[in-house]
Image 1 (cartoon, rainbow, N blue to C red):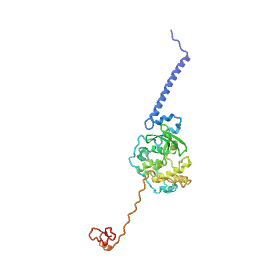
Image 2: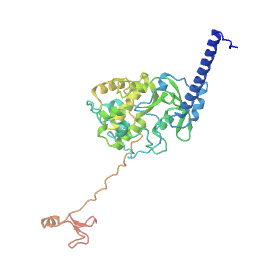
Image 3: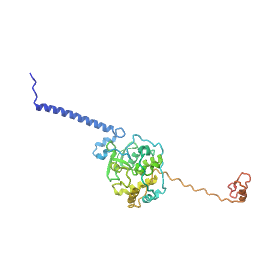
Image 4: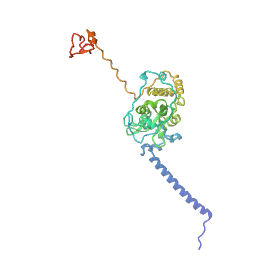
Length: 343
């Protein structure tokens, strides 16, 4: 007896059900795979406790800028915290830094054209990012996050997991949450970009001095990741913070960094800096946290008065001063008791 043939509609429905079932399995597998990859891809290679908070209603929304990669200036957390192979050593080119306004300090900085960027190597010239230059066990990036963020939570002594940033460049309030797609929301900006420094005098610095420049808190600021990417390696002539009330502070830091490390400014950069500082002439320059304490001033030892007698005869004979214990020494000629009979 032949098998009854199913209606075409039933056949199509069965086919549809098979297709729908296979699609659901594929979607479920994709979701599981993506979820596992997100945990395994956490920046330091370990599952981060902060990721568990990403489902919280208070977690920050992921904007397009949040998924952007870190810049060359701020490549993110280092895989391992290292101390620099060469001890940092700051250069102080102007010892009156603490007593000057930023606009007066700007007048002391040479104005020149940029050198070629040829040979610039962020890691080779300025050290691996980020090093533990102050030897507190924490890398510089986490040190700056801990300094600039409020309401922070940490994993251990160093690793900043979350916090709040009153962002200085854009004026936005940013919720920082460590994670693969959220860490880049907050980046560490070199106010004087390292490639800019390289083209305005840093080529002549020692490796230790360049390591200082790259990790000096005076030159570092936690900022909005998209603003940092927009700035790039621009100087004051090509980029300024959108928040105008912060520009005086920003330029004062740039001027202080350039003066401290013996760098110069271009003509366009100088004019842009001057325009900003002219609106706040009392803005003070800042000092480097890496600057060594000034050496104590030692007053010269006073030279005792010496009474000379019959010295012409000694000099005429071509003899040296007669010291106590030497032949010819006479206490009569040693009026001040310094052991020299004649000079």
